[in-house]
Image 1 (cartoon, rainbow, N blue to C red):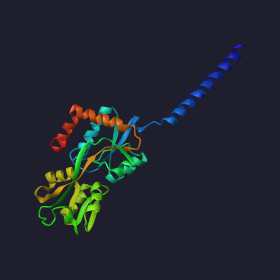
Image 2 (image 1 turned 135 degrees about the horizontal axis):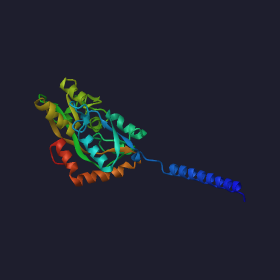
Image 3 (image 1 turned 180 degrees about the vertical axis):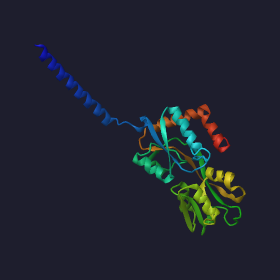
Length: 264
């Protein structure tokens, strides 16, 4: 066997080995697609205005709040980087379904119908719904008193579902953000507002004060969860990170900072 013939066979063997290697890698990718959890940067959606969970700080122009700081702590615990994407709440679940978003953290109630189309983390906040009226209102003391009245709430939320099922209101006005629904009531366009308890409480404390009051009980106890596309490998990692943050006391520190009370 001469040298040229030997080298030619080696080249054929090397090319064949390379082809088989490429095929093997391709098969591995087909069987085990790369999950967004392992991407360099993931996209995390949050609401544009849902204080104290997320809102734009007028001093810095940056989004902050309990959800924003909690996610940042989770990301550091896991060791992943991310881009925060503030957007209207009603666009978050479709974004997760389509795969355009990797995570949604926006005071999102864990509901059976949502769990059919996206995955949720373990609950990270327990809440409910509160009914808010002007302090001068005398004829609304509970949800049953909304019969024939106009009530405002946020589009695509649990409060919208609750009102349409339980209140015989003349009209349920829907708004894309919190400010608009509160303003509608204060300007006389609605008789009441119903929404998540922490947001209502924050509005009473920070803005409404003696101008508004909460009436009736806490309706429809509910838990918030972090949303993901179906089958996301991030779910288990985030659940483990949440537990670690609670064990370390970091979750409690954030809760006290934003709600001025012990975690429930």
